[in-house]
Length: 301
Ligand code: FAD
Image 1 (tube, rainbow, N blue to C red):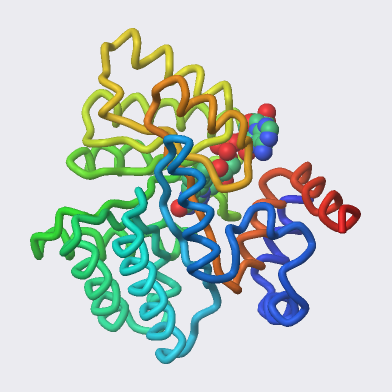
Image 2 (cartoon, rainbow, N blue to C red; image 1 turned 120 degrees about the horizontal axis):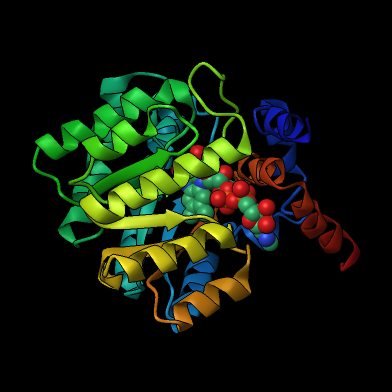
């Protein structure tokens, strides 16, 4: 129930605007690496020093006007340039909806291609984050069409809660893929709802891509899954160059450092920007204990 409550809040545009207006408080600053490029680059440099690479998300949701989507694209291009200029170990994650997917597919593709092209010039990978079910097919289509145009620096996310996840994992075995459990509220017609079913499907798709796929990013804070992967790669003699673990900025930081220290490739997902509200609410939906972060922040002022 709490999950639905926070997901509902994440989709509330009025609250989103109010959050931006009333500042970067309520704990968001612990899980969002600043509101501008300069602050984000400082955070990335710190993580790089600990042997951790980063994937950068310029936060943004609720884009219904082409002008907003173009503005978002310009900001993302500035992120690509900043990563290059500062020579930090990082790539980018983008959300197609932020670049106009809900407005006009062809327009969105043009915007995404501009970003992928700029990143490609400097050998940078671009991940297409996967959003809710209605955006699944168009996001795969973007990936397919850009790959067909010859771009190899693109990949996407497969969400284990979808019934179709194993089929998608097999289909995209030639692609660098991030595997996650899934963060949005979905219908039981298309997705597993029960945690155990999701976890079981998650293990299935991880094993499938590790055994038969290209580079695999295992994005989870779940130590049971991480321990399973450690054991699985050992048993199947899978090289550490073939995969990485990923976690979100500000979550289980000690575990992030430990995995990097143990010699696993580790990548932190670093969100930044003023539009932090929806992202933050989804994190509360996943784990209401994250509310502790919020409470601590309010009382530590
Ligand atoms: P959960 O199922 O939330 O937790 C399992 C167990 O792990 C918990 O019971 C607890 O014991 C432990 N645990 C979890 N969190 C903590 C914590 N903070 N502190 C201590 N113990 C903890 N979703 C999408 O739909 N699309 C995306 O593109 C996407 N990209 C992502 C990128 C990254 C790098 C990550 C990490 C997640 C991404 N997600 C994405 C979100 C993902 O789908 C899950 O909703 C989210 O990661 C929560 O699931 P989990 O696997 O971390 O573990």
